[in-house]
Every structure is written in structure tokens, then in C-alpha cells.
Image 1: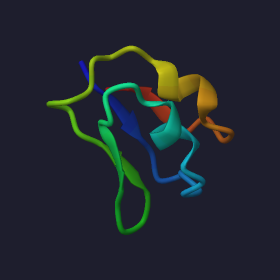
Image 2: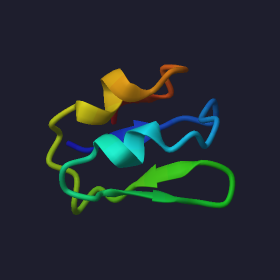
Image 3: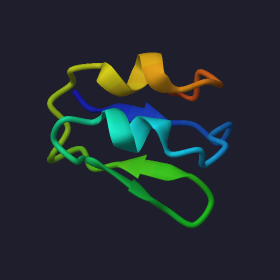
Image 4: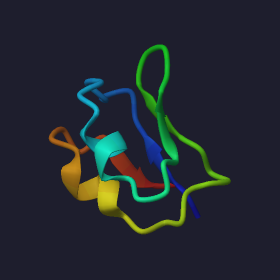
Length: 56
């Protein structure tokens, strides 16, 4: 199951840099996670300074 990024995302890009499979991309209001690419490793969760990423 892929992780999701909430509206509290500050667009810092830390999660994108941490993703080993490049499943995270910049959206209009926040970064988004492509569920088809996400391998549920959780690497992005620990990198988010505002805790905006959680399991779906």
C-alpha cells in the first residue's frame, strides 16, 4: 500500500530526494506519491519535517 502526503506538505522536497524509486513528484499544492511506483519502504516518512506523510 502506498503512502500519501497530506495538505500540511510545505513543498520542501525532502521526501522526493529520499525516495529510492522516484515515486514522488511535485504537484500544484503539494508533493504527490504515485501509488503504482511506491514500494512502501517508508524512506520518505522520516525525511518529512512536518510529518505530512503517512500510510494510505
